[in-house]
Length: 155
Image (cartoon, rainbow, N blue to C red; front, side):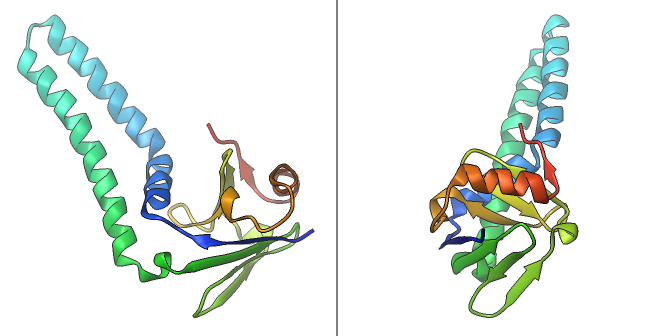
C-alpha cells in the first residue's frame, strides 16, 4: 500500500526535530553540569553552581534560536510538503522538484507517536506528520516501515 502525506512544516516542528536530534549531546551537557554543580555546592563554591545552571539555559536557548533561524532562512521549508511512501520507495515532491529514494538509500528512520523522521543523512531528514496523513492507518504505516525500512528505536 502507498501512503500519502501533505502538509506544511511549522517552525515548532523544525525546532522539535533539532532538539530531538541533539538529545544525547544535550543530556551529556545536563549530566556534566549537574555533577559539577553538585560538586561546587559541596565545596561551597556557589558562584560556579549559578554559572553552570545558567550555562544549561544558555545552551538550550542557543539550540532553539539556531533551529528558528534555520527554518526562517530556508524558504523551501515554508512550502507545502508532499510525500508518499510504500514498502519499496519514498517520494518527496514540491513545486521545484521530485525525489525518490529506496530503503537502502535512507540513513535511518525514527518513529515517534505523532511523527516519523526519514533521515537521508545524520543531519537531514524528511518528516512524516501523523496529521498530514491523507488516508490509511498510522499503525499499519508504522508496521510497514518497521518491516521494510532501516528503523532505529526512538526514546
